[in-house]
Length: 140
Image 1 (cartoon, rainbow, N blue to C red):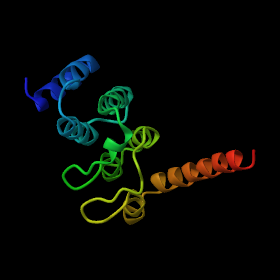
Image 2 (image 1 turned 45 degrees about the horizontal axis):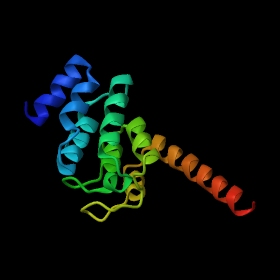
Image 3 (image 1 turned 30 degrees about the horizontal axis):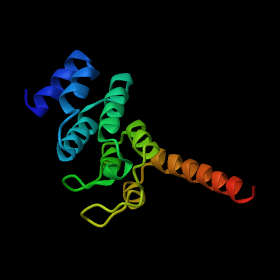
């Protein structure tokens, strides 16, 4: 079973175990390409969130989530595809808003360029939480 076929089968049968079993020992490049594909085709629902989470866990190291695949990082692809829940999963698992794509745009730049209010609101809340955490640690 090739990679795209494995992903399609897993989606049609709603079986995360197929993704896990098929991609467990694949190369990082294959896993990242699979993650980008899933971001593009899945809906933001229970199945989509579950499958994205499986791929993130299989990639294992947060720094790897910042790898540019084709022209953008997985986090940037979530912005392009307007998938806020996938964006959230990636961000919470170590993906960086500061990583630049092949056009030199960071995740921040891309959100501002697209002008998506949902992402802008989320980023403002995210930054506020980070600021509060920093302050609470700094003044202890």
